[in-house]
Amino acid sequence: MTRRKQYWLMKSEPSDFSIDDLKRVVTEPWTGVRNFQARNYMRAMRPGDGVFFYHSSTEVPGIHGLAEVASEPYPDPTQFSARSKYYDEKSSPEHPRWYLVDVRYERTLKRPITLEEVKRHGDELGSEFALIRRGSRLSVMPVTAAQWQHLLALEKTPT
DNA sequence: GCCAACGTTGGC
DNA sequence: GCCAACGTTGGC
Image (cartoon, rainbow, N blue to C red; front, side, top):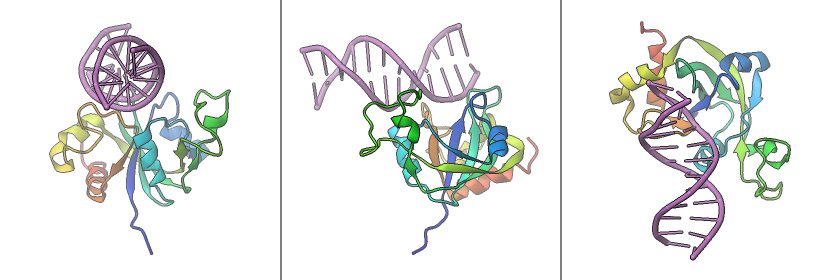
């Protein structure tokens, strides 16, 4: 039984971890997600899935690179470490609350696809797209194959 | 189970 | 730095 490749968008503050950082380390465990909906999306990820690497809380928020899911989902080790800022006392190795995947660098976009630009294409992308849905702050969200193609095509067009 | 208080996210 | 929007917590 095969599973069709799925697509996702994952946010990161570049001051914390940027696409350049991912390029340097190549593969990185996506630690620190502490939102149940985002966790559920990560649990649905499989190796080979496509990832838009999004920079948030920065001068020009937008999609800056491509990555791929590089592992099955597994418990986020930082939740068990009392010294981690991501420590969760309600979690235990027997009953982990938080999961993550490893993310592998693929490439940096020739130019970022900005949030402003994504909003301009909101009609084609669908208003339910979490990135531009009013009030949505999800840090991990699904992207449909159609949305993926549409957004990626913007890279080749003038701004 | 309700909901006020609080903390966080993230664009601006 | 501001603040709107949302999620979580905890008292009742």
